[in-house]
Structures are given as structure tokens and as C-alpha cells.
Length: 263
Ligand SMILES: C[S@@+](CC[C@H](N)C(=O)[O-])C[C@H]1O[C@@H](n2cnc3c(N)ncnc32)[C@H](O)[C@@H]1O
Image (cartoon, rainbow, N blue to C red; front, side, top):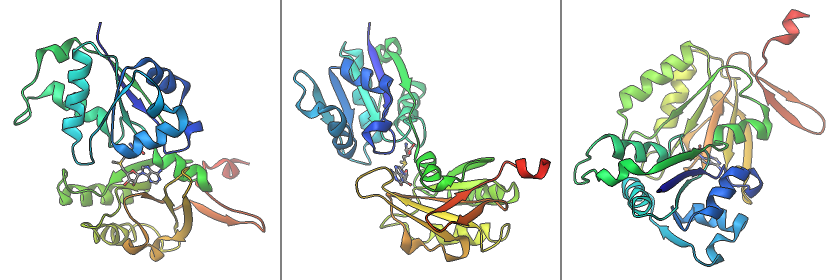
């Protein structure tokens, strides 16, 4: 029997890693992950020092290589855990594994042994949930996520999706809002959303959520600017009903489900 666990480790706080994920990590002999994820995990499980486990660290940008290595290790009989932050099925490594199984990517010939690997996917808490709960309940009604990375998706497609989110009045969370090489996209999508919802719409910038160096800022949509974010930030924009309530001791942002309208 060959086993590959696709393990989600949540946004950062070790206490947000599910017991099922911990069990999978404990059971495996080989862990494949980007260095930062191993660091987050190491704090939770001292995996780095656990005897008998081999860690395979591959840098960002080598997603297909990481997925391929995990499949190869599992196919060779090693119980393997491939790890992603947040949820491994959301803009993360699970898709890379299934793309490899599905297609023969250029330069990567599909290995028939991969088809015998038993794959179990363990879900986790994604950045949008951590962002919403950091301020209240911004995802309280229909929402969507849009990645602003146009490395693999044409920009025109991304813009069309933002128009759809705007006309459908979805709460929107933008993942990958900016990087050193991508600094104009966020302002463009802000201007698109402003065609559909007011400038006063509550907007939440969550950076390094649930990690030691986390920060959360509540602003309005018309104040949003790409200079405020980086690749460790996710940006959630409320819908037309979302509210920012300011109490003497705390601020909350939530999206109503409409209960008060019925009473
Ligand atoms: C490649 S995506 C990975 C998403 C991840 N699988 C998830 O479910 O959260 C990377 C983007 O997720 C967002 N992100 C992931 N973890 C975050 C955190 N702890 N705080 C803020 N944003 C985060 C950022 O927008 C970042 O650029």
C-alpha cells in the first residue's frame, strides 16, 4: 500500500491545525514542503527534530517539482505528507498533484506507479476565514475569492471575474494581491468594484494572519491602495450590506444575513 497525505496546516497558528492533519504528519516518514510551512509546522510538532522523518524542502515557484517528488516518494512506498498553508485545495498544492495525475505536463512524463498511490486530502482553514474572523463575520453572506496572480491566469479573465463579483454583490477576498513584480492589479480591481459598491464599503487587510507578526487593518474600499499590501496579505472587501460597527472597546466588521429585517 502506498500513501500520500495532502495536508493543510491552516494560516499559521499551530492550534488551528486539525488533529487529523497532525496524525497524518505523525504517521508519515517523508514531508515535502516549502521551507516556511515546515517552520510553522516545526513549531507545532517539533517535526524538524523528530527522528526518522526526512524533510524535502523545495523553494517557492517549484510547485510541480514538489508535487512530483511527493508522488514519487509515495509511489516508492514511503508514507508521505505534502504540506500547504491554509487549505491545500485552495490556490495550493492539491491541484498540482491532480494536474500531474491528469496530464502529461511538458518535460514531466506521467509515472504509472502514481496511479496506485492512495491519496487522502486533509482540509484546513484558509486565509479568507482567518481574515473574516479577525474582525467579526465578514463572510457572513455569499462570498467568493479571486487570486490576483496573473502568472497562470490571463488578466482579462481575472477582470471579468471581478466584474461578476461586483455585479453579483459578493463579498470578495483577494488572494495574492501584490508582489514585488505585480503592483498595479489591486488598484485596478478596486476601481472595478467601486463601479458596483460605495467607497465606504468596509475592507479588511489581514497580514500574516494568526502568526506571531500578524496585523489587521480595517479601511474603506476607496482607501485601498496596492502600497498597503504584499504577498503575505489577503484583502477582503465587504458587499453592499457589510457593516463596520465601532464600539468603545472594539471594532467589528460583519455581513448581515438579514435577521433584523424579519423582526
Ligand atoms: C498561494 S495562496 C495560498 C492560499 C492558502 N492555500 C490558503 O488557503 O490560505 C497565497 C496567498 O494566500 C494569502 N494568505 C495565505 N496565508 C495567509 C495569512 N496567514 N495571512 C494573510 N494572507 C494569507 C495571501 O494572499 C497569499 O498571497
